Length: 355
Ligand code: ADP
Image 1 (cartoon, protein in one colour):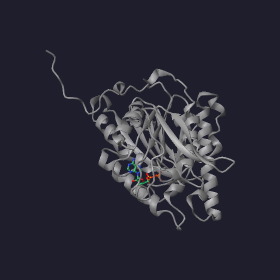
Image 2 (tube, rainbow, N blue to C red; image 1 turned 90 degrees about the vertical axis):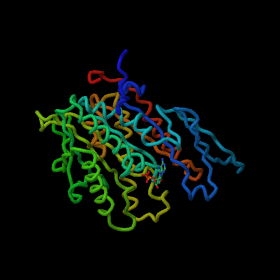
Image 3 (cartoon, protein in one colour; image 1 turned 180 degrees about the vertical axis):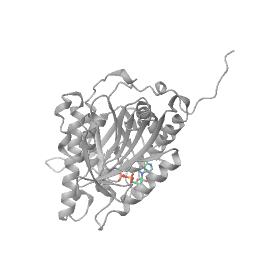
Image 4 (cartoon, rainbow, N blue to C red; image 1 turned 45 degrees about the vertical axis):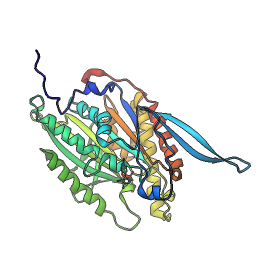
């Protein structure tokens, strides 16, 4: 009789059924109706009807002013309903990227959606965001003999109005450069070596505080900046080179400033224009992934400039489109899903060397 072993904490990645040759995966996550929305009698107008499909019902008016409801259907690699937990989502989004990074790859996981749709909750929630689950997974694996030659460190910065600020060093301004070897170097970015989950979470919390308190004026909040948490893996015998890299991005809200119901000051308009520009550049770069990468418009914004090495070559990307379930956000939901749908068209299969 063969000995039965306990089920390991990290089942082999193949068990997730995810095709690791796929360069980009696009998933959608719907948050639950909030208490306020429920009290207002709002209904869920975006049912997840299968493991890959979400429907959106949006109110429309005909020329003769009669009203009707139009239904739109979208299909993605995964569609997560409001009952899905971050753990379930982790297994099908960031987890394959952690595995890939520990094999020496570069990867990016980002959340895209309107403000209030659950980007931060999914990616960078202090208690159970995907980054916490990834940290647990990473340190669990680095504790194994197979990975004992690898060390981890983190960098954390934000991009606000097309400028970079170091969240681990008093929001100091930073400038990204290309080192000529397809690596993006952000000169002066603080890199904190982390040996365990607690240290990583502590460092992250410190940076999050800087993100919250660094803004001045009532109109500034974190939905106007992109936050990038990067985990760098290095080999002890080659500490100057990056072995693997995984970036978690909590993007700025995808809606326009005026849609937030705020007064449109010059600053708000400028912020909105920068955000739209960077999100458009991001889409264009992703779309260029399986075409002529040399001519992808990475220089179009700081966001794409810093993410360049996560997108070119044999990198992996996972996009999580976050949506709200209620009727009053149906147009934002449709816009998010249309953006995701265009990103999804990229199905570049890549060199399986690393797998
Ligand atoms: P965003 O980062 O897109 O602006 P947040 O992540 O801050 O949105 O989410 C807005 C609110 O909704 C927060 O109070 C958050 O706790 C809640 N929320 C978002 N997603 C979920 C979810 N899947 N389950 C429960 N609450 C959620």
